[in-house]
Image 1 (cartoon, rainbow, N blue to C red):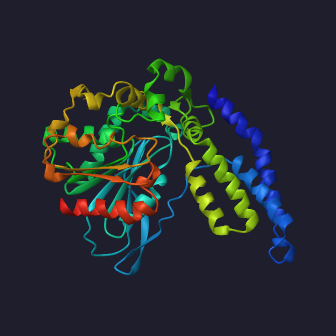
Image 2: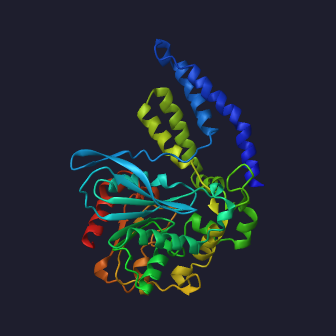
Image 3: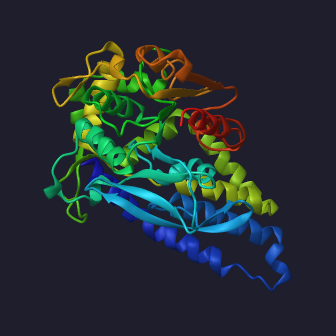
Length: 406
């Protein structure tokens, strides 16, 4: 029902969106001195604000077509190294010969946004690493015939991707995949799998949500599983490829995220409006880029979503030592031959301080010389993997950690 209501609302707003876009374009006169008048700037700003607030945002492009290696520009092509029903392993292949750089697998979250949210994360590793990323598919676009997708399936995907990349791979897990990444590492260690990554870096992941609980933790862990099944799980309508699939819709996840900081989002849109009137194109473009990404959301498979709610937030299975993978007990003490780094942001309001770093204690068989924790001051959740402090402080330290334990 919620899915249909949302679709109807978007259909109702569509004429308003088209009218606003056409009006904005109609009153743009690049050769006229009146183009920069206060009246026309204000009118176009108003129309663009309406246009953006009534738009439906599809998956953004990567916009990572080149990188700089040793002072020269090198082209990038996106290649699906592995294709699975619910996820592709994308390789950012650099068009240059003779490159012998370490492989890094960036595990993007399956939590409502597309992997392109990690564009900045990827960009920093392109000059000196062979970069791969888990590019999760919108569940509404996966045919029902492919079957359900569970938490255990997620772990299996990660192990298959690491097997494809082989030994000497480094893993960078951002937020949600930190838990399944550790589960995969435990299973691989117990089996003596030679493809266990050299290093694993966990960034802002909910390993133990009992520590410094946030509003997100309270929401996810404060209700029983039946509440989520009854209130947020929807069936994909007939007009999509995944018709009949049971999903947790992206628009519900987005509304939850935005409601946490609604005042901030409202103020940013007022600032955007004023920047357009003032002619501050750089600030306005930065706003467009951020919200083009932030407002583009995807549906998650219902089975996986409910598994995650139960295992991670309600029962805290990994932290309590009761996690299983396909009926097999998971013991993080089995992990011995992998270096582990944890990263947290001082101001993170999604994953509380200590929720990620506790992994260092849980993985007690890893030597202390192979464990590192970084808490970045003045950084929130998204600042852990994007932005100036990520570029100038966090990414260099992650690279140094990977190099040390290669």
